Length: 357
Image 1: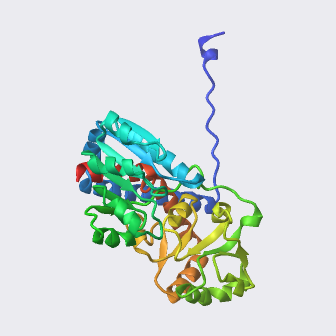
Image 2: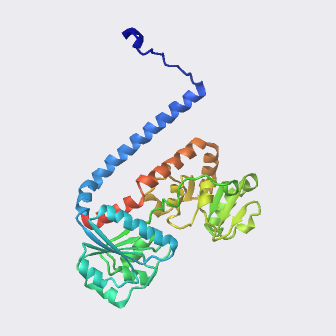
Image 3: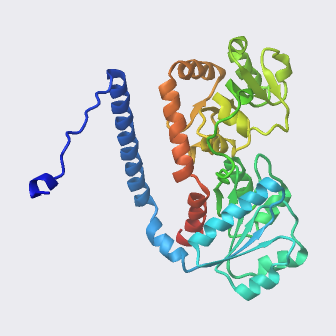
């Protein structure tokens, strides 16, 4: 075989011409992706100016933490595990024990840089309370106080240098009780549980309503009730039996598949962490304005808020007729639940407050 015949025969690449609609869709998708990357980079630059996270991270790798959990129940137990996993990544050493074990001996043996108590579901023994009072290390408690708190919780919080609450509305109460350093730091969503997924038709809806029909809830329900006969609507909360056009879910219903099956989720007066769970599912949510929202989420970007029944109606109509705007908000909420308010970011913030402020 001659040298010439051994040459590889080159074929011209085959050109496939896409139709106009497909080309426009691809162009629009690329432009949106570039914009989101640019916005994310800008926010990271701004955040780095306010929080020296890199230097803080290096310092955190030198610390030792004793974490004592007072969490009970399956859901809270999983939260405890996720907090421990992130702290092991961030700190030099983490020793995690349950509340029923006396931690006074562990406190003396480990001599940690930080004693972190997580949850307030179980009462502390007298010896453990004495050990906390006598400890010369930094002391922090990450409360599981949710929508309500108590005098007993405030008295417990007084034993700690740093208090982290699930509800920003509790901060004045703890401060008036004598706590000097109180911060709003909610638990993040359990991403192993709350994630986008396909669901059966039985869980799909045009609207998912979460909240009780009382006081302000009554006004919200009345303002949008004209759409109930026209759409598939699920509702969870008390008082919805007065609206026969929709399907009322039982109070103990597992809402995860309904989050993933809803086109629009509307909620008010709900648990502070519900917005994180909905965001982690990549679902679109219309939420009653609340101080808890603004610390981590950005209305108009990864969540849409309303202050009145009239505003709820207006925004429901707008996003029902603007699918792309609704999809953009839902996509950003999913992105931010991974990179802005996951357990890694929140535990990093806790350590930054304790050791770098």
